[in-house]
Image (cartoon, rainbow, N blue to C red):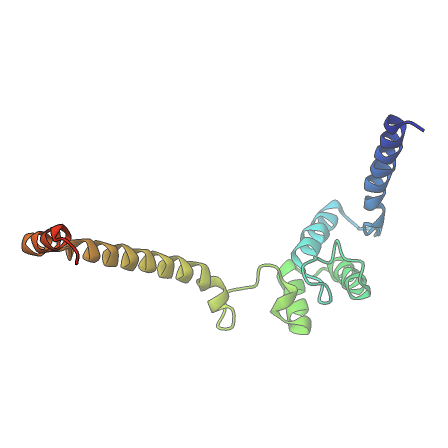
Length: 158
């Protein structure tokens, strides 16, 4: 077998492997009573985080708890619950962790404020750094001190 044929076969196997990776995706079908409910289902399933997985929403997770949450979501939508009611139910049961965008309240205030705080602290650090640098350059030697150093450098060493 030539080197070209080997590369061709390996490339074909790689393409098959890459194409089959989508086969693990979650495929569930629910019979929604309206298109609006189906659209809300997809939006909410993207908003809700799987309690077991580190960083996957319930739409993408294969965990059993995510499957259960999708069923609960479907049932609540069909029962006529609003998005806020569904999110409140999920938060009451699993905590704010279940939401990718948690609400602003006493417990999540630091989470929402931290990007601004980090920006202010970074700007303050840069200002302090440049002020110290400027102060160091202002404190250079006087003319008399500079002349004394030059005179010492010119003297022969013993």
